[in-house]
Image 1 (cartoon, rainbow, N blue to C red):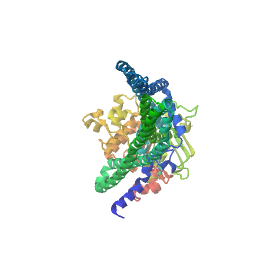
Image 2: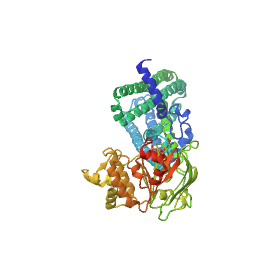
Image 3: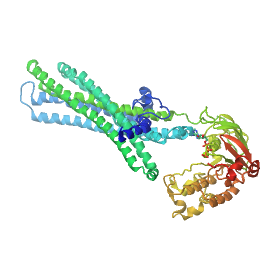
Image 4: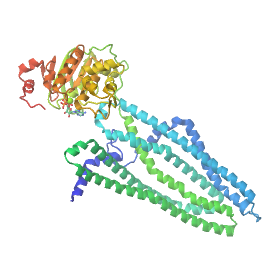
Length: 623
Ligand SMILES: Nc1ncnc2c1ncn2[C@@H]1O[C@H](COP(=O)(O)OP(=O)(O)OP(=O)(O)O)[C@@H](O)[C@H]1O
Ligand SMILES: [Mg+2]
């Protein structure tokens, strides 16, 4: 095995799944093998039905477009047929007299205006359809996004960001293409085909049969080519997905690539994926491209055959020259709609597959709705009690076992314990990111699952372990914690969080724009803003998950002091690895493998000489 082959094999291993997922499925509804076999939609009728719900909301425009399609198709057919009476009356009159230039001119003017009517209605039709398509897409994006806001945290934990993003972009784009162009071309092509056939039969039955003779052959060729090009098209999409994934990873991981000197190998791997994309693209384009020549060839054969038979009919059976002329035109046109339909089928299928992926997200189970008589707390005090709580992200693996604790307003409860012990998990249960499997959690004596979820969350302020900021000014980011906070309140919160000093040192102060999740700030500064955001909310329950892990000890002390008066009436939960942070807590819970193994104040725990003592005196390894 050469080095390149080895690389290719390892890429296949790493990105194989991603490739398949990019090609079609993956995601919440589609992790089965069938879903990975390219861009085939599974339930065509159902998907079309759901798409129609979006399209049919534009009834007036749709009716207008339909009328325009009819007018344009009809006038194109009529105008081409007019050539027959024009030739027979004004150019080579059937009664043997001389032609009539003035009459010819008048007739040509009429023909021109019919063509013009066709052109105008084609224009109107495409404008209307574009509008219908874009409006439907807008509604679809709206539905998708608003549904995504309703989805539980569990959904986001189980799906990759890239996959969800591609549903928003690629998949919706594909649907858009189909709605605004493909559908109409299938419709127009069908209509043109039927119209041409009718006129051909009307003009001459024998010649029509000659033309139709070629159709089965033509259909066979077209389907074969369309199938092959469809296959390569989905391979091309998969390869594109893999390449995109690779590029995305190499951009986000650029620092790691540099630090470990992986530039060369990254380039090599990229080239392999790039080569694969090229090969598939060439094949897809080749098979897409030979459709035209093949169709042309068969059209020419039909044309010649028709001309020969038609000529004979003219000489022997008195078939009129005008008739032959229009018929020859038709035999040329005849293949085009078939060609068009075949060409668009692949994109129709990939659009339907895309629509299915979008609908799969829309069908994902949202957070369980509130009870009809859900409880609305009239100011919440923040008396938290957990009783025998057990919880696992999966039913078969319990992460938390039999957790019981209480926290009264004004108390500070701390969680310590090694990495992966379940500290963050306990805190995820309070705002109901996840619901407990066993045991109960009550706040102010009411089980949290009976609260209105919005109200519950409004009463809990959280600084998450991984800080997150939105694009916008610092002022806006802090105010995110409570939208009606005044500028003064925001600044007050920043002072509490010890963020005010560094913010004032920024050239634009509170108006500094944060971009890319705060990449223009230091890690510690980001944490301070997250703390300020939690402080500005007046929630009676405050959760700080490793909120000060990246902040220097002096600043941490300042924050502790600042928070102290805030905490007076609040219930505070603090998770920290740095044990100095939690010394003053009313109770410290030592968590190990999802169980509380020790609890008490700092002094109690030291006296106990157990796990906490080991952690505090450095006798145990701190993770
Ligand atoms: N979304 C999730 N899905 C499945 N398992 C998870 C999920 N989040 C955490 N876990 C698992 O739950 C266990 C507890 O994780 P948790 O995040 O609560 O630990 P922690 O005590 O906060 O650790 P750290 O100190 O590193 O933050 C871990 O074993 C982890 O693998
Ligand atoms: Mg954690």
